[in-house]
Image (cartoon, rainbow, N blue to C red; front, side):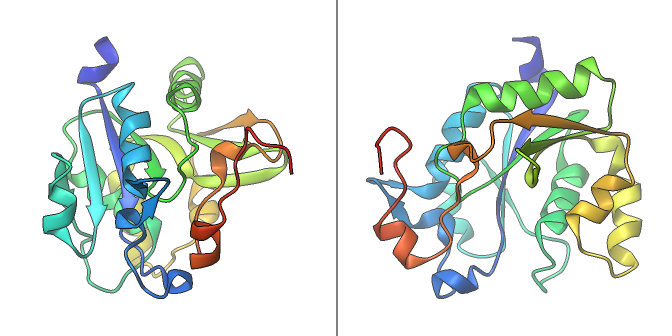
Length: 199
């Protein structure tokens, strides 16, 4: 696929995970596999160029066979810091970014994001589920790295605010779509939502 040479997949696994008792969420076991493995599987359906953004446990993450990079600072500055680090490291024009803790994300959903970015000639394509922005599921052009660097240097951290300043396309998904369910707490890890089951 031609896209495999121009898209870098990015898995964001650099957070503190305070609601998970500061454990490294990407490495926690969900339905028999580390959470991050679901993100990697979804991305490999589109590209073999994958970066894992992690701020700890580099040796463990490197076992998945992809480059592991840390934020530019050690202050856990949020997901945009991981996006910037990936923009600075990637050798492609486009990043496809997803979090490490959303096991129901699919290759098809990521393909929809990528196609929307290209067809609309946008700089960023971001997911929207119903009327709720899903800012950590996005496709972005690496040419935005200077813009993003300036935003973070100014002390700002909010993804939604930065996104609204860009040439942006909103990519709509069904409201309450299980694609975007993330595992934040030990309780959610132990009692996950199963999209194929009735409540």
